[in-house]
Amino acid sequence: MGDIRDWRPFVYGGMASIMAEFGTFPIDTTKTRLQIQGQKTDRSHSELRYRGMTDAFVKISRQEGVKALYSGIWPAVLRQATYGTIKFGTYYTLKKVATDRGLLHDKAGNESLWCNAACATMAGAISSAIANPTDVLKVRMQVHGRGTSDVGLIRCFREIYVHEGIRGLWRGVGPTAQRAAVIAAVELPVYDFCKLHLMETFGDQVANHFISSFIASLGSAIASTPIDVIRTRLMNQRRVHQLEPSISPATTTAGAAPRLYYTGSVDCAVQTVRNEGFRALYKGFIPTWVRMGPWNIIFFITYEQLKQFY
Image 1 (cartoon, rainbow, N blue to C red):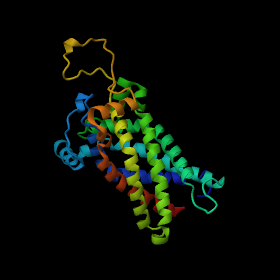
Image 2: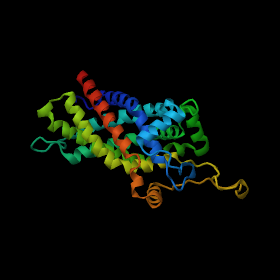
Image 3: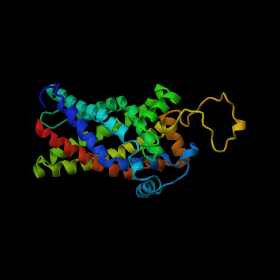
Image 4: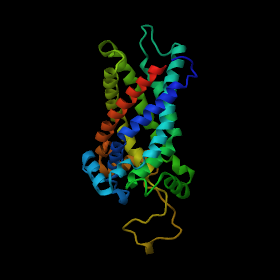
């Protein structure tokens, strides 16, 4: 990889992440809508509006316009420009450090799974925590829908800051970092492992990158979906003075303190399972995997091609 200060893994990781985000974002919007619906504690999202990914895709397109499928695309691109850049650049830099210190490979020359996973976990957690505000903006805009003309990036940022403060931009940072760490710990080592073992059959070619990234996406989707559901719900909840539909204004007090539906990750998980069943933690699994597959394929193929400039 060259010098440890090599900037290319960071730049190439960010560029490949942005390309993958543009190509798969509508699927991510359907995933977010599916994860939000059916909440017993949040009456504004208690209705089951969509039967699945395809139904959500069709209904959003018909009722809100195709543009609504790309609501939140700019904070998503901004997120990948930070998260993707830091995540993949840090991962490959840490692997270089581990290699130089003799920690990554065993005596037979094989990569150590624990060391590989540790590098990926650190890279995923650090990068996602830094990029959390862009993730909050993306989720809010995806849930609102009807295109970015109604709720633009700047307006969405201003509303969160005014009503919820700077802490509102880091809402859900715990499960976000956990999810990113889990995805990275599964996805990156599995990709490197599959790519290495398929080298004799396919060589360092697109077919190898395609198969390896697809296998990696399945493992990361299974491991991360429950955390993603919790993260999405925490990010979407607002600490504002909003009246429930069943509550009359006459019964509320002007000085009533704003409340949140969930106090944290554990509370959200417990309430979700208690009110909706364990399967609710896997809401949006299909679009998650359907998105992760193409996303990883686009990313890793793009990244591998950019590496040719090394």
